[in-house]
Length: 97
Image (tube, rainbow, N blue to C red):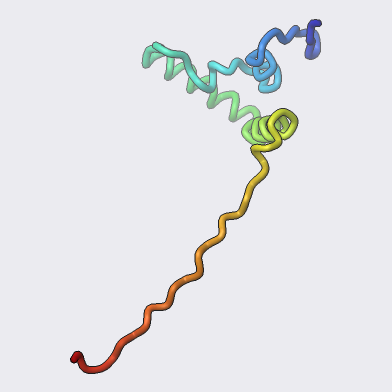
């Protein structure tokens, strides 16, 4: 079974992420062994994309939350931590024996 998003075939998980973001994942995460010049160019391109689409971080967060909710809902099962009752220290005023 083949999966298409628009006219693009999504073969792997990275393909789905790339199609959802509209940019390659490596643009945001970098690649192992990239030079300082490559890193600077990558970050410059990322800044340009964010300037053109300031809502991209919110969109990515929403997509990630929807994916977690769909495929790993137990990650949203949050249990509040109970704080222990604050202990009072008794003030001992008086003469020492």
